Length: 129
Image (cartoon, rainbow, N blue to C red; front, side, top):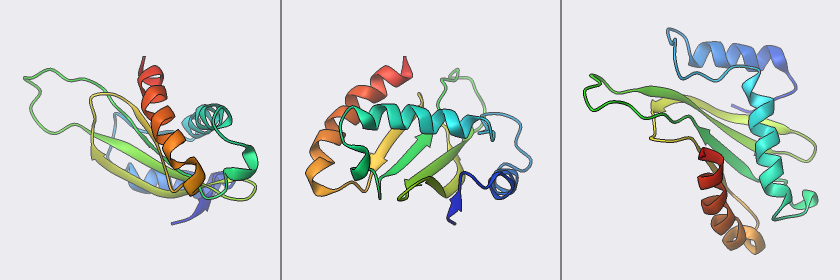
């Protein structure tokens, strides 16, 4: 799947298909610009905008649950890919919920990999709090 985030109809259809029969820990159409804004804020501190092309970002919802919670809590996960001019959704899925929200970066140019790994670790702690 590769859907431009600017194509609201296709994004809504993909979200509806992925999250059918779900009622909690979902990503809405209004959440995507917020995730992108947060991602761009982090990326702008570590690399030039011209180097963003090809960057893949995964956002996983997180929440803590009581030990007596029966069942496996599921949440929606979204993977975004930065194109030349805009962001694309390349993956939407329901998966096991994490203890906390995670924003992770992948597929970066070699010159930025180590910097982003370090900053991603530091910033994910700040993003959670």
